[in-house]
Image (tube, rainbow, N blue to C red; front, top):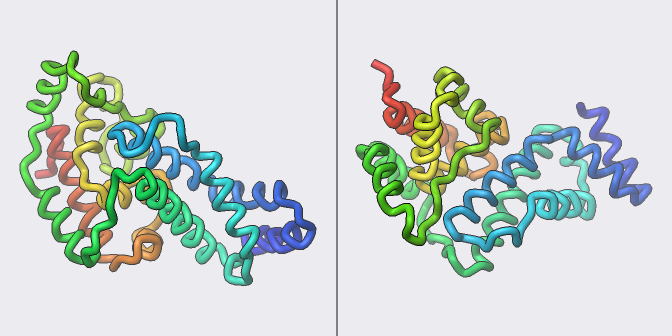
Length: 234
């Protein structure tokens, strides 16, 4: 992998951005699905206008940033992976701020983690929420967001649940409802794990957290989903 990343310097010196971008795409194909998932959810809950921001555009901006400011550190696969995901998070959060629908909380990350863990441990009643969605289906409100099939399958693998659960519409609805119920930071961490395929250590680097905090959030997320599907481990 290090040898292939050396091509970045060659393409940079030749000012060949297309070849440069192709190397980055081959190196980290998970980046675009992660960005797409974050945008899709932000559109669904009304944080950004629909069809205004596109994954390809954001990924291209990230690649341009690396192209313009390529350093020797970027030739290290571990460091480059973290940098690309950090750039993605920074650009996505900038978009949310610019839409004036989200304000950054000046709260220590440790306090946010504790708040979200407490929220995840609270009893969740997915059946009541689904019934409420059906009852109010004619009112103006976002429709239930079904998860993409690829993400569903990978999510069930992460939860250590059978992929056959996707065959029932009710289970797909419950998965989506549990996903929507997650606090913001917990959802980002989950997407970095499932879409980004990052290790706990890599997620901690991207989000500037302790590994133990990342692990605690993901374990709480697992319990939330398994409770929702009636699959809580004994």
